[in-house]
Length: 443
Image 1 (cartoon, rainbow, N blue to C red):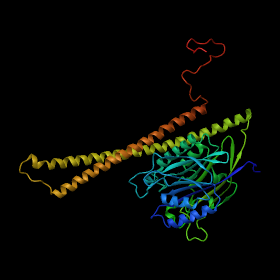
Image 2: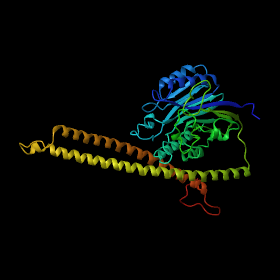
Image 3: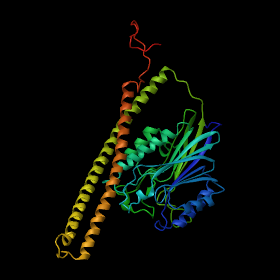
């Protein structure tokens, strides 16, 4: 039975696939999305891939009555694509851009130019403070040979850090977005285990939507079935996650997804399916636990700690694989640059022949000489830029690997029952029956 003080919150999340001039039927689909959102009674709307600010402003104008408060997160060359619309006032916002986000020379994928990030909004829902997050992680283009996996793992690591360090004072935490990870993928397990976030699809009491909650379905006309191999029916990569606090219980009463086609329209809202979760927030007083409850809590914490160590070890191994690849690519760029420099020096030496030997003619045609020089300069410039990029990638991977190593050590100390840290001047009492040592600090 629901508490009389319960607060209900409807959360909507959708990857809009809004690439102007490239995404199919983009203006018409934005009009459909705006019409639907203005009719539905969503408290929070979390959108991804709203790449054009003009499209955001168009939605803002259409939703000015139903969702008077909104924010668009700007990042990268073409923006982060993240936007939040809310019935409740937004008091504060912040954007954190992930340190790794693909490669600039993979222009056909486009992730690097998008400036993938996580956006946060602090919203008051009644007397409760909600930290609402919206994010979009790097895409997985090939399941078998996923060269972006280390980047996505680091993004998941940075996402959980950002959520943990910014949500300490929040009564409720809600995260929505396109994580580009299957439910049991490494980054997903790392995010949920470390933050304690719960999956709406797993926790819901009632579900209405695509089978297994999939959000990329084979029947969507914007989806190529080749992209879903080996998952013929589709995959679940979009999520609404949540957690409460010591003052608040949170439950998912129902969840639904769109099912591809939209009534009275020739095409769906997007290549992704939209998610809607109905959350119930029940305030409560902190419960007092006896000795039996404390022992059970300790056992539960030990089990979660052991699971976290395993997940972190796996994540650290994947980051090390990324480190090895980045070092190899930087070495290749350096070697190519040295070859280009040697070729340029050789060409300059040949060019100096007419000045060193009076009357000698230039051994190469002038046009070929200039073309070869341009090629040498292009090689040097490209390899120099690649060297800088791979060095930055190495630094980010090394930083994440160091943080994971420290986290594993801390968790292992907790599991062994050792104190995490003791200050140098901590006062220590001698064992019973012994006199205080002359080296012990005075009381």
